[in-house]
Length: 295
Image 1 (spheres, helix red, strand yellow):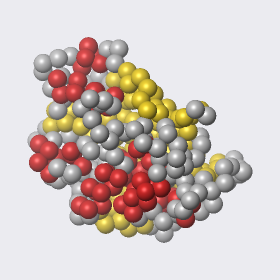
Image 2 (cartoon, helix red, strand yellow):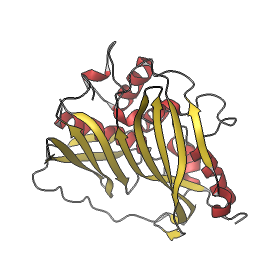
Image 3 (tube, one colour):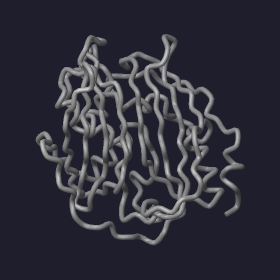
């Protein structure tokens, strides 16, 4: 290792960054087409952005090298510390107001936590949690925590075969064929250009057999499924944890159960493929009065 990660990250912050362009119906439609989202509230002149797109709007579009995100700067520091591979593991989002075309958003970001070195199935590494707040002149539209593993790849290991049994009482599952097109197009539609989502050689260098679906793609698929179970609900929060990655050719089976939470409800979602569990999540919905048309 050529540097100590704690030293490299000391005092690092993302500050505030303003989106290069306003939210657009075109970007919303592109995202919906990539993940198969058909919620009518996401289309037309009064379109509302799918909640999982929260981070998309402030990601850099041009000049990425000149205005790197905090995640990109942490990634550079991790490489200097000998942790050249990366994979997202957790995604927690809180949705405060609907995001609509024409809004110009900005974000604040900061490092919340850095774990001690840990041995994982992918290799020895460290988890870094970054906090975000996204908003405009009227205040925040949402908050987020993203946890990422930066690691030194270990030799490839085979995951145990077998798909977990579905929980009793689960709703009808949604089967999503994870094609290479879906994985690449959904990643780019969310403005995520991390090479592990589209470059096989980079993925292989990280000890993976192929490119993998991004955590934002998985979040979008989870919300697509959960939203269909609560068609009139307003999504207020998402808590998501990834386990085994999704590769091209996997068949992702999403299953969910709804449960009341006061006057609202939550949908617990699991997603499995032939090698085991890919994602566990909970999506919260407000069934009471809320901004009209909000997904």
